[in-house]
Structures are given as C-alpha cells and as structure tokens.
Image 1 (spheres, rainbow, N blue to C red):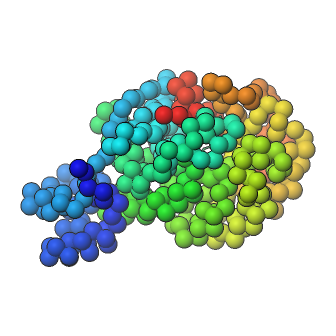
Image 2: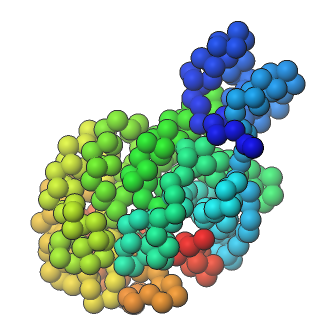
Image 3: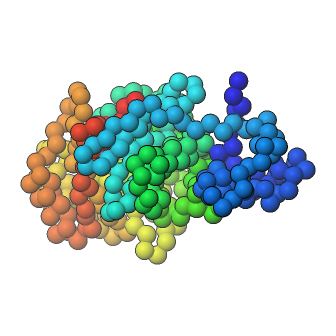
Length: 340
Ligand code: SAH
C-alpha cells in the first residue's frame, strides 16, 4: 500500500513543521528540498535514517513515462502514468532556445468543448498537486538526462488536459510548491494558466501568485461561444469580464485571450468588430490559434491566408495580436489534441 500523502505536496514550511513534530532539525528541510527538486550534487544525499522517517509518512512517487512521441519540430509528448493506472499527456515544446512544459491538471476534462479532443473523454478525476509537479520533474529530467539538453529550466503552461480552475486548489498548491526558492524556484511570470472561463475559479485568482492568465475566448458573442464552450451557458462573457476586470494585475501584465480560429465560424468581419469593442479598452493580448483537427472533429482549419487576414483585421483595430504557430500536430500533441 502506498501512502496517501506525497512528499511533493509539501511547502518548505510544511516540511519544517513535520520535521519539528519528529524532533528533527528544521534545517534538514533545505537538504531534502535540494535533493527532491535540484538533485544538487553539492548537497549531502538524504541520510538513511532521515529517509526512513520520511518514508513512514510520505510517498515519493513520480509519474512513470509510459510512452514518448517525438515530432521533427522538437516537440516531445509523454504519456505519464499514475499508480491508479490513470494517465495524462504532458508535452515539452521548444520555444526560443528554451522549452515550455504543457502540464495537465485533470485526467480528462469536464468542460466538453466541442472543438477539443480531450473533451470527448469526459472527466475521470482531478490530479493532486504532487501529480502536477511530478509531470514537471519527470519532463525536465528527461530533457536534461535523456535528451542531454542543458537548457534553462522550462517554463510552464497549464494548457494540457483538464480545466485548471476546475481543480483550483490543487493547481494553486502545485504553483506554490514549484515557486519554493530552494526547490524548483519558478518565478510567477514563468507560468501561464489558461482557463475556459470557469467563473468560480476565476474568482479565486486573486489568491494566486501573479502568474500569467489566459482566457480561452474563441468568440466575442455568447451564442457562438456557448456552442464552442458549453459552460458559457452558466458563465457568460459579461460575468467573466467582470471577474477578470477585478483581478489585481501587475503594471505591464496583459491578460492573454486565446482565440481558436475556425473556418467560417469566428473569422468574420463582425467578429473583429466585436473583439475591438470588447478588448479595445482592456489590457489584452490576443493569441490566435488556428484550429487543429483531430479524428472525428467537425470544424475546419482556416487557410494560412485567412488566418493572416483575420490577424490583420485585429491589428488594424489596434489590438495586439499574435498567431500561435502550431507545434507537434503530427504527433497529436498540439492544443486540443491530447487524449490519453
Ligand atoms: N481548459 C483550459 C486549458 C486547456 S486547452 C482552457 O480551456 O483554456 C489549451 C488551449 O487549447 C485552449 O485555448 C483551448 O481552447 C485550445 N484548444 C483546444 N482544442 C483545440 C483544437 N482542436 N485546436 C486548437 N486549439 C485548441
């Protein structure tokens, strides 16, 4: 029987309290953190006695790599397994001489977005914070030890399987632990959380460190948006924007609006006009994602010219706009193609 509680869900403060409760020096928390997260060669390994104490209370499980697929563009997709037999996909994406890790927050997803492959699975379960952190550790180790790439630590996007704000407490704990200075030492601006607009979670974002926030907008019209993202029925754009406007952003922080572009559906002139009305006055950056097809999908990807044209319409309307180039689509590792 493995223990329920994972060593990877503890902040350094929590580890200190645990050590104190066992009459051990709280200074040991530093050694333990460095060993768990940095594998820092200058540190003493965790002594046998200490390890025995820890192993009585915590499991040290990390996800297993069940399969690896590599795309010629450098994208690496992992199927990572947990000890209940469930698995998720985690993707390493090359980005400007560095990598970004796309982490999953749930096994499957409850949102059922009509354009998303993961949505066809339904929700199987939430991931624990230790399972979210575990994906990062395993992917970063693979990068360094298997691929031999000694690049900077990868950035993080919560854009894998699942709706991170539907599992907000575990995601928040994962973020806090990954920010521990003696652990992974991630900075808040190295992490981006993308949400489908799960309002109860957006309302919790002011309790989060100041990570980057992305909203999957996809349409400025509620009637079209609810076809794409069914939860828009309960959480319409007015309510989402009211909550987003209430967020305490940093001076130069923009909310990123992801805009899945589907041929003939949301790439029209009126969409551009309405986006201007909605985002013109806000601190916004738009990220156009051309639709990535998957087996059985009902939508069409617009031609490259149409994508460029839509971008131009937005730029003319003074909206900061980027087109997200698709990586890993040949191995079904691109946005919305993850299904374990
Ligand atoms: N649940 C979160 C994060 C996961 S999806 C969210 O909805 O934001 C990450 C991004 O990929 C989202 O913007 C999502 O809308 C987009 N996406 C999903 N399916 C896609 C597809 N088939 N093609 C392109 N992008 C897709």
